[in-house]
Every structure is written in structure tokens, then in C-alpha cells.
Image 1: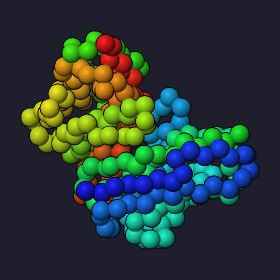
Image 2: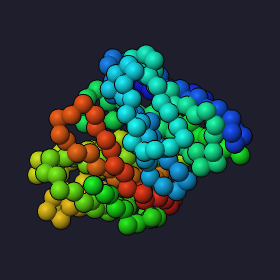
Image 3: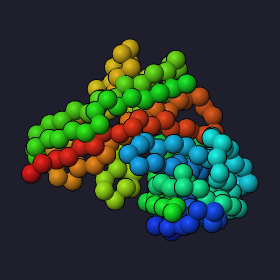
Image 4: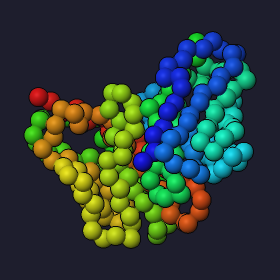
Length: 111
Length: 117
């Protein structure tokens, strides 16, 4: 079964600074990869998904971008963070089946 | 567009008792999946149970079972013999099944369950 790693676990960044969150997957190949954001006290919102290297689809317009430089690596980035970017970011994967499995998440606080 | 509604923001249950969490959804699709995920204080999202809409039989996983009412668009989760480790936020989620390459989950806002000793 697959294992999803996310780095870092916690991050505190000032407004206007850049961001790079990393998600890596072990134990599977050619996964679909997803970035979700969970604002405080809310459910998860899908931000980006990817079906392969270099293939990124965005679900909502925002200050963030995503990239997939390798089959099992998914990166979430920003050039300039906003206060509203604070939240809990979760990476998920599936093998084209119906069930997604999640990583441990990254807690981002923008001050 | 599909929506998922969890009308119980918080619930409490005594250890060893049974609790039911409610979820309703809105969709015009006929083929889809429904999920319950658990998010304990560690915030790791853990799959609890899944249900295919074309199956009439309710899914069961050990102490967890669902009551799937397709016509009513209702998908409740029953937790039997509640344990302290069941304390978590529970999310109901919907996924359309269209044979596509990607599967987009739509989540409800969650129910915070506290199991009391």
C-alpha cells in the first residue's frame, strides 16, 4: 500500500514570503495526486490535482500554484503569501480507483 | 453541482454506547461513491468506510456501519461500542463516478465527536 509524506509538518511564514510544500508518495506508481486545504473549522477544499508529470489542473483561482516534477512528487507553491493562505494543507493520492488516501498534512500559519 | 451537508457540528457519546452521525447530499448523478473519513487530533485523514451508490447493501467495517438511503440522499454513520479513540472530527464526502481519470472528493463541514469516559 502507498505511503504519503508531507514536508514540512509545520510552517510559519510572513506575509509576502514565498512558499514551497512538498508531497512524496511511496509504494505506488502513476498515482493521481491532489492538494486540499482545510481552513479552521471547515471541511476540505480541493485546490489542485494531477494525473501525471507536468499535468496540473486547478480547481479554484488563488494565490497558489502546483507542480509535479516527478511521478511521485507534488509541490504546492506561492510567490507571495497572503494571510488568507493560512490553513492545513493535505496531499492525497489514488491509483485511478475511487478511494483517496491522505498524507499527514502541513500546518501553515501566515503572519 | 454536488453538495454535502452535515447538520451536526458537535456530538457527544458515552464510552461503549452507540452514536449516529448524519449526512445528506445533493446530486443529480446516479453513479457515485460516498465516504466517511475520520480526522483525529493528529489531523491525519483516515478512511473509515465507503459505499458504492449502486449497491443496496449497507457497508460495514467492524464497529462502523452506514445507513445509505439513496432516494432520500442520506448517508449516516453508526459507531457501535464507542471507544475513546473514536474521538475525532468525522467528514462525509461524495465522489462522482464517471470513469474519468480523476476523482474529486466533495466534503461536508464535519461533525466533531467526543467520546466521554
